[in-house]
Image (tube, rainbow, N blue to C red):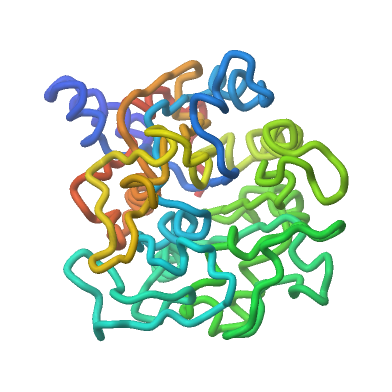
Length: 379
């Protein structure tokens, strides 16, 4: 029996044995071996996925090719705390909530992680006791890369790989400049000592987006985990871009129409790939803008609620593409960024980190993975 056939049999048995909601949470992930995460900026679900959306490729074309997660939530405001959560399960603290204008060390108020795997204290660059998804992947023999658009375009601001300022320095990358619209606050990997303290390792894994096409040329050169951060124009962050282009959803649409086909037509994706396109946070307006799901908890002792004006980062939605996803699927099961991390960890048989280990966030289930892969997984 092939791995694909075994997965489909187990998923069917699980669905028959349990109520629909329980089955969605309990189904084992399919045999995916290449995960792509692409993160956009600052849009609420009702705006992004409106009938007259300025990003019709994201709002309509891609959901028709995969699954729309209509109840997918961010976990905080502003940006950085969401990116940190996606790769470590750490909750917002008052410095990551402010996007760390100074690249400061995280100061622990307790010497060990608490029972929920949280580092207690505040700061930006997490100490070595805080592990990340890349740390887990490498330990298990898998590969990863973060691809950052524009990183290193202006070497006076940041290096071309592992781009960040020295500890204790002000970070100028939060504001886009013509020719270099990279933002370190949208690059989660440079906020962990387990990654940045090994300069050669960080340089090899956190690179400019222009490296991605060559890596997609074969399944063998495509990392098992790919994290893509567009620049401050392409991700929709800036309403008008530093280079004069229209920003917001218009820029998002242009970026996705260029890059998503490169991903989904690659050998790795066609064999056993998964692409998740989502947003770091909602726009912060109203209940949708700072809502939460999945029993989200704040960091113990935190100065502010994760969403400042609410318990979370708001409803942002997500689109999932994969050979294992039936085109046109719509799921109303609640998920958030901790669910995303938990799902990726489940795919690679890793233990969930931080709040991804809590009972509330669920692994993407049969509500998402409803289709059969047309080819055996790549080894």
